[in-house]
Image 1 (cartoon, rainbow over the protein chains, first blue to last red):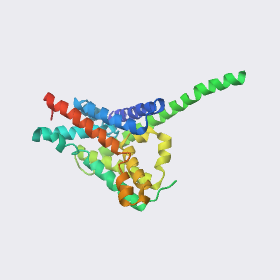
Image 2: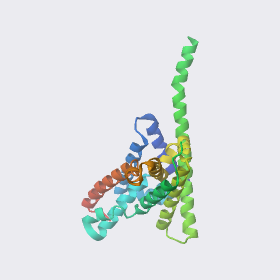
Image 3: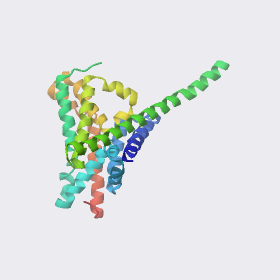
Image 4: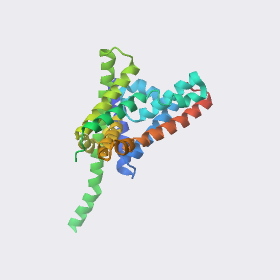
Length: 116
Length: 147
């Protein structure tokens, strides 16, 4: 059942993005930014946690989960350190993804040439 | 007259059909990636004997690695041309934007080429993610339901 939910959720997120892309003048850059903000907003009241519970990997893969992880780490830190935790915990959960992306990009850029 | 009518009908229907096709492909590719993510999650928790949150990290890194590698090998752009948002909205799009920027600007040198252009496309995601997370987080903290 969770696989069907994964398929539907991830598919529908991509479908919405594709419909926005085809019917407006927004570029993929605009759409990913909007989706990150939507993900952060959904996590504000705990809706995204429910989505992850029911959709599993399908909810963790789209870029909306990036906004969710940012705010989740920030709020998690506030419980131990108070208000300053918003700044301290911002990258707690996303650090691994960003670091991995930076390292892979740099290493591949050293070894590969652009192909046209 | 007949030709004109025919052309008008073609013009009316062609882009729409293409849009439907793009939307369908994006839905299918995104959905299959979502199922792969869930399969990997279950697999990693099973094989490596780690918690689900650790398996999430492994799963995301797997996707980031594959997207970076395919971008470096030069055929991720063709896949994106086919699947569009199906590949751009998952975390693969984030990794793709960083790797393609790094490879594209590598001839301008390691500092002003790779260094200053690495976040050229991915920077907007991080910027708006951090600003919105800080803003919403502050609202929730002030409402007293944080943590």
